Length: 238
Ligand code: UDP
Image 1 (tube, rainbow, N blue to C red):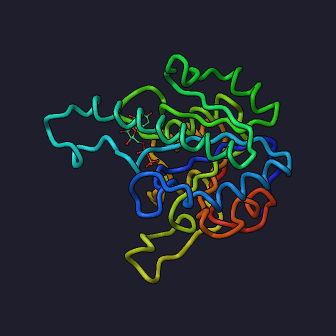
Image 2 (image 1 turned 45 degrees about the horizontal axis):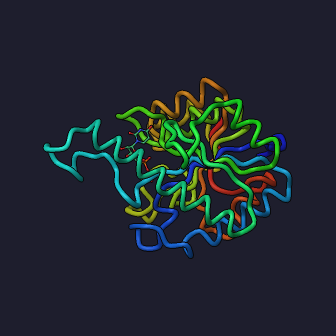
Image 3 (image 1 turned 180 degrees about the vertical axis):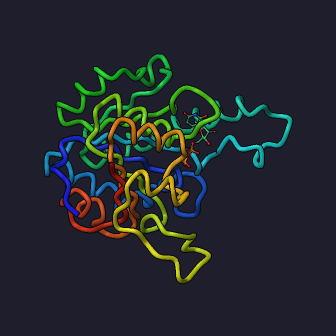
């Protein structure tokens, strides 16, 4: 499958990507990502990153029970994305990658409030933009942040980095015979009820005609292969 060349892409990075053991931040965990981001910058592709927070917390009831309201837990999750964004920003800077953090809600003197024009002006100067703070609203995840910010900055694609190699017909961690799809349409995904992103985020990407690529960044050079139109992961497009 080929795709027109990419000028600007949005990477959805789960919080777990920052962690080796699933919890907290370990700088070594992002070695591969940093390497690929550098190479993508050299190619001249503008990169925005939406960072999650699963390595710190998610706003699920399972995690907090009844005594912390879901909206409070979700706000805690959004704050945790800011922690990750600050860490990722410094790691990028330490590796010579110019970047800015923009958040749904700013913190005076620490993080600027996100605005599409500002984000695009940073991207146009070659800086990586890290989007923190989720959408600013509870009851969704950073998948929704990814489709929202991708639409705002008119990204050519959403690159969803996961711990599996793409979209499968059943969970590959549980079924040895799970089959990976190379390409799917948005309609295929809905018809087959496949898990690509949260449904609301998925529909937004479809409505804004933003293709989604799901792939495993731990496959060395994966981002480069995606940006070079080589087969990698699973593409979903209209
Ligand atoms: N979150 C939210 N609104 C948003 C984005 C995130 O309430 O717009 C909260 C939600 O509780 C979510 C948590 O932040 O579980 C962390 O995000 P996510 O689960 O997407 O992290 P990831 O799985 O990508 O590490």
